[in-house]
Length: 168
Image (cartoon, rainbow, N blue to C red; front, side):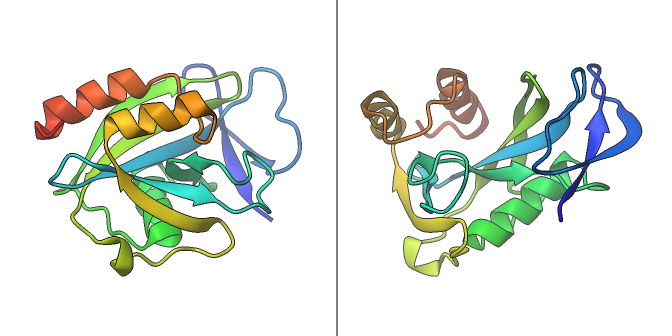
């Protein structure tokens, strides 16, 4: 059973918790992270979700997930990236690109610089079936074709990567 901290609309913890899988009350929010590993070629690592996941099974997507109670955005970034693909996020190779509010969650979007090869990844079989390095234009194309989750912030993300790493 996964338990989340509940936040209010100002991103302040309420002191209450929520059990994953049950609907959040109106005005309650939880914390989610998206993590984008970036290599020195300016490519972005994306992963294909297993067909058994409830949200967007079989789609290509960012690495990420919900924060468990007690974890902040940074701890969740590190945990999700390590658990799903076996990449270590450190303060030296990572940067928070943005944070935004959705209808029932706050989402922290992270950039992590790494040159790990596909062969070095350790994919979490329960969530990830494949991963690949792609250019921003290849990712946009996948979104347009409907094979990748179309995150509304992708143009901003590509700009943030350019500003942070100067590689796109």
